[in-house]
Figure (cartoon, one colour):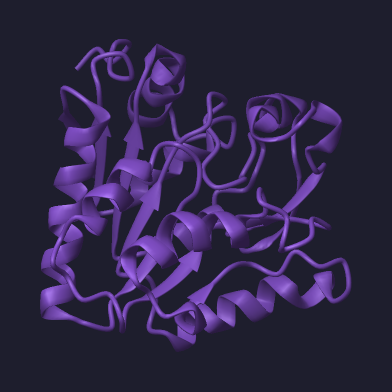
Length: 240
């Protein structure tokens, strides 16, 4: 079941989610967070950094990583998570994990990452953004709705969307390691944040459209505890 909360700004959405996360950490200091990258979750991380919560025992699992990109590259998700989450919040780097993006061992990387999530007891709160084509993490249209962590080819549309983070489109990797849709659905609670009219069609299809691999985010309709936090633009095509 999807709950929809409309907000006046991305900052308001970030504050709402941050309050839920800090309440969880007060109850469970070793909470497991599912960490998203991109612009959508940044207001959450900024609000968390302003809180008085103790994040030293919190564990984290990132959604995805580029394949073949040096982890030291500023746009690798290892670097992004370190810069935007680990350092501002004071997380223990040893407790924060990112899917392996190295070519060597890629065949077993997904299974190994899933085993780590299971050993941690599963994700308590998963943060998500949504792509303009309805992807969550890097599960592109056509991804099986029960998919697991795996190597995935990036569509040209997603590469174009992400080119703003690189010097040129040619620098954007062609493949990634991503948690699967089925993996994401195992999180106990999910928050998806979106803003702007550019996401409105994807939000409409995710919430009101049929359950379909054409819009991987529509799989969230099957989850018992999902909240979409949307500004006016992102919610503009919803009929209900």
